[in-house]
Length: 597
Image (cartoon, rainbow, N blue to C red; front, side, top):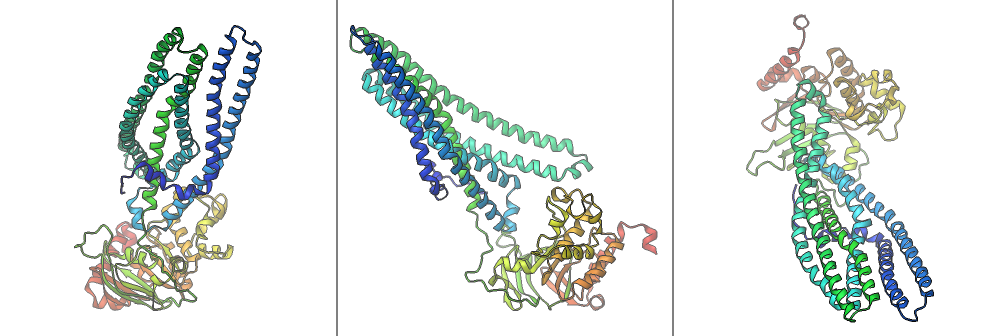
């Protein structure tokens, strides 16, 4: 996950395309917030005039009531401006947050499998939720208030200088150490803020992995070790948060203490100036009332700076994901898919993963294989030979790094990925189900097809158990389907691939979790429904080979031999070794009496 250093203005500038549509409303919110501050600053001036008027020998007592009325009006206007600011900025800021979140989700969906292998799910989750929430809060409050606070302080000090240049100069001198420390604070807080947000993402990944793997942790009795590891990460995050809090407390101390000291010094100088006749009592009252109004913005300067730096980090983290580019590109002029016969050809296909050293050997090193329309081809090979990877290339989950895969003679890269994936269905060995109903999971890729396709797919996959669940096929199966057994999940995944009615079906050992009897029933029904569908199936069990018209042997990254099962047994030594290994694995866990029979 790259971390490119950017300035504050560069990071905030990247928000412009997203914030551009709401800038008019943000500007109105800014004007309202500034109006509220101006109303607050006007009240001390009224008080100063009131004091000078009532202290005159022939002062008018009625001026008090006039001043009270003016102060009430100013206070009411301040409240109205604050309410208007919130009305102007909250809705558009949430709109930007939502649009950025949807854009991030769409981008993550478009990224390759290799991208998801690199990025932890917790990191993506924290960027999609926490970071965008921080950006929204900064747009709606932090950005506007930081500008208003700066202008309020500037205008307030100007009024103080106009009232008494001597007293105002004291505050100007006091601002120098605040500004100098501000630069140091910005550098340190930016680093610790980034560390905190990254650690939060890592912690979220740990929680997600532990929840998904809770059965494994319990089965192996590793709960205590997992807790210790989590506690260590949580303590690291806690220490970082303490560093953040300490840094913020220090800057808050400085921006609060120095103005208070300046105020004390100004009080001494002010009283002496009044005694010398150089300053009126009303001016002194106005000066300190203005200083009281300015004190709140000065004290909020530290938290607003921290909020801005945190938002900068959130922006950087968001665009780190958005700047990732997919190696799978869409053709400029995609070729329309009108009708596919199902012919698939692997022409000198090469593939290596992006993190493989340049000099490293390709995982797939010149695969050549042709599948006829409607043919069922079994793919066998030793563990790690690249069988599953080859299957993923068919659905273009990865792109070949050499050679080509052709559908009906056309390189699949000339089609749009959406068209390809609408004609290719996949069932992986590592079953993934969604937190939804059985119906939704099975019909995920079935388009407009309804109950008829659902019933047929469940029947072929021998997933009749779905009708016996508490709510039948509308039963929610829980996160990743973990409320079901391994065999049940695998049958639902197989039904999902069948329900899509694809022209090309890719199966990665879809029967591995099934018992022998169920496998025989599924195999028999698959023979019927696969007629007319080109099928490439990875076989990890010798019984799965029985599904195939032909068998392809993958060895050293290339196809070693292709032919019927009986022919390969008679002519290919490597194939005999693989089949023998599969038979050993298949019988290893069975009852000895059953094997002998």
